[in-house]
Image 1 (cartoon, rainbow, N blue to C red):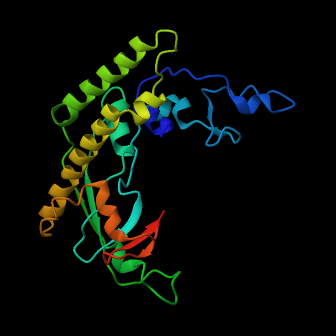
Image 2: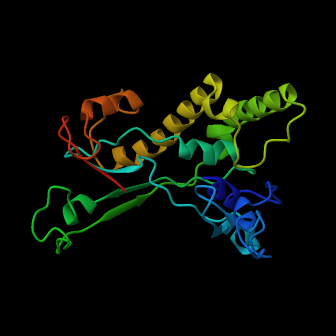
Amino acid sequence: MTQAIRLLSRGPFRDPPAKVAMDRDISDPFCDAQLTYSTNGHDSFPAPSAYASRKHAWVHIFPEGKIHQTPDMTMRYFKWGVSRLILESEPGPDLVPVWIQGFQNIMHESREFPRFAPRVGKSIDITFGECVDTEKVFGDLRTRWKELVSRHEKQHLDADATERGVLPDFLKYGEDAVRLREECAMRVREQVLQLRRRRGWPEEDPKAHLGDTSRAEGSKSEGHMDDGSWVKDT
């Protein structure tokens, strides 16, 4: 997530010294923290955001976070990662909503032998929306986010300034921060819903955007769920 936010933002970025380099017998001049990132504190990968040619890149995301297949094309609630991309990136990123339908006909999760083979003769429809005016749609949320960050930094004068894409616990789990990400995710979802309506699908249950609706799926993490949907982790 940090790398995705930085791909959408202007640098330079600061980072603490890379821990992975300290575990090696020979230091590597290319393992500087700004040139690499780690997923668990031990591995190390080249940082996409370290390359100037990738600044302000496109980041394609599927906000549902899982394969979710239903006959009426109802979407799951959107994960909060999409909110972080909009709230934390600087400057505010462009947002182009996309509606895709047809994958379920090619690789439905209920398919049997040969499960590995895509079903031929099917079509996929992709609908692109207009580029969203980020300031108009999300500007008030971004302002509230900056106020939260400023409040945290004023309360912790002895701490380093919050670095782009790196959050302290207050901004991860604080009630105001959580509520802000929820609201942002709902607004993003509404942009995609407009494309769903354009494709002729009926209105969703107004509560479908809430995270609590996942309870209707039952206790399984994937497979044929209690609410009739098919879900798979990606």
